[in-house]
Amino acid sequence: MSTARATNEPQESGGAADVAALIPMLRRIVAARIGQHPAAEDLVQETLLRVLAAEDRIEPGMLEPYAIATVRNVMATMWRQDDRDARNQHRIHDPSEPDEAEEVVVASEEQSAITEALRRLTDREREVLLAHEVSGRATQSLAEETGSTANAVAAQLKRTRARLRVEYLLALERTEPPTDRCRAVLMALSSADRRRQREVDAARHLLECDLCARLSQPLLGRGPVRDNEIHVPISADPDIVAARSAAREMAVRAGFAGADLTMLATAVSEVARNIVRFASTGEVTVELLEQPRPGIRVVARDTGPGIADVDRALEDGYSTYQGLGLGLPGARRLMDEFNIVSETGHGTTVSMTKWFDTKGRG
Image (tube, rainbow, N blue to C red; front, side, top):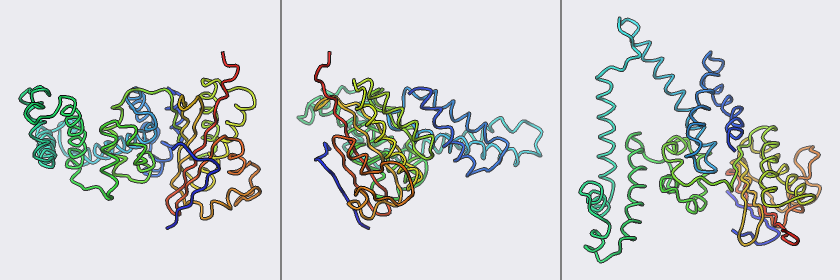
């Protein structure tokens, strides 16, 4: 396994339309699982309704992973219902009405998961959590016992609750994460810690790990709603247009116009096109920056085969397909800052920034 990195400057470090853009991806997922099943389109529509209902609570950048987890859950529900109907065909009563015994089993499983999750906490975590949540002890009172501060105790409680949510979901699934990275990603999602999510590259991990994608659904949407980021899932040519439109929309808000706006949109098209051609799936994130000065940052991330020779890929005229676009070299020239990291077998991340010239800005 090799990692390649190239840069021309040091890198610092929707609405209903966004949901509608998920339709092609959802249809592909459903078709891959159930083919031409009569209920295929109903499953897609049910997923869209659930995503729309939860949109205000979904952390920016997590719309696609949330939709993927939701459609999987919707299909699983259909399979369970079909199985239940088949097993109860011989009965006179309506099998759609849950048996009391089944409800008891579900409640028992949930209680067991809670017990197991509490057991996995440290003694100190469990003691403070129960004292606060069950006994009603104030953070100041708990802090005085240990010579700490109320803010420190509150921060500890926040971390403990985040860990408890993660451990509960794992216990309910009766599974352990397949990689060491999984718990870190789930913890970052559970605590709604955006900085930590970036550090562990949570968005990429959810594309790679089916378990975390599934478990992430109840953990998403815990942070404040942000309108300075747009995340566009990329898997087909229409998504290239969506990414370009999202970048233009964000850039106009930042004050871009004329040639700068065109250059930004063109660069976004090129990196999105690379995802479609070489990686099949990925995402483009467009972020409105205020610091260190106004600008737009674009991150194109995929989990494809990676680029073996990044330096060569950045040479003018180099291409592995007969396309008419500008490619990565062109995108680099169009932006003020450009950085690419590629790991063979694990995908590529392109980060690029366009700064807004504030001269003459009213």
